[in-house]
Length: 173
Image (cartoon, rainbow, N blue to C red):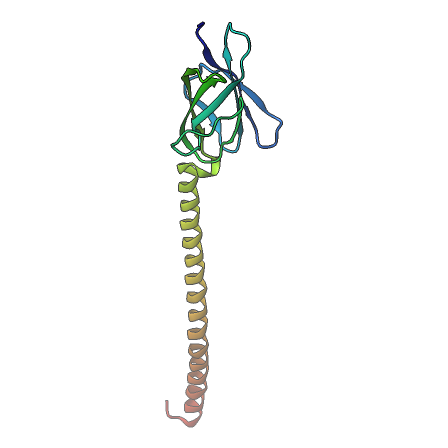
């Protein structure tokens, strides 16, 4: 029998809002996909035989380690979890003839707010906010303490002044 060749007919990445659709070349090893995009894989067989019915099954791309059940030629995956992924597709004809599997690897990039440098900036901002808050708390507390100590000192100075005046009138000083 003539050889059957399994291939990816089309791979697209669609942004979450649906406005940006990128065609990915099947030969692109390890394509970078932004988190949140939807990936659509369409695969097919090239055959010189009369068109038999083809069935496909998948492994990887967020599917558990086992092979999926036999299905049609389309797969859509939501790219949520950052990391490296590999999709393996296997095909067979209705007569049971298996075809050599094909593989596609890709990387889902983290959201901008899941990057290490954003977390570092957030940590530094939190530390700065705590430091500024502590500084303001200490400044206000010191100011309040100074005010409470100035009042008695002022009243003592006034009372001392009165006593000195009284003592002068009495001729004690």
